[in-house]
Image (tube, rainbow, N blue to C red):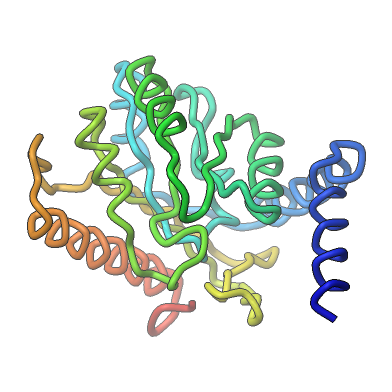
Length: 240
């Protein structure tokens, strides 16, 4: 049974790696997301401030929760500047990356639980070249809404400010079998996108205690922003 599972998994990975197979699927997914988004009455907070900072030539690090990824492609206007979205090198991450590319965003893959020194240095070079970076703080494997310290480390390395992003929808469905209960927007109703420049000071040198305090603050602040987004469209608490 284990041998069969491995063969099936390998076949799926091979199919996802094939542009001829995964390309049309990702185009369908992106068209579906765009159609849903186009039929939502959106409001925004903090968007103009982010746009002004990016258009001034400052690269930023955009951070959101994995469960709100469906709103990520439309949360960034390509007229502001380039955005490179960090995804997992695993098959689901590759699919996410290809969907992001359909919206005009670049992607970079990182391996789960393995050293990514070359990719990290590439991120640093991109930030210095005014390409902003998008990252799910709890991705790619969770636990849900438990932040990793990676965005903080990147901000320290590049000097780029961190911007928190969240979106919510009046009408939605959660993917119950996904580890993050990903919230998918449904056409119609209201939606909101919130952007907030993170107010933490990140020192050039950090010990383990400092990093953990900043990680917890990032987690708390992103949860607070996400809760505020959900409440603004009429939900009593977090939807996922």
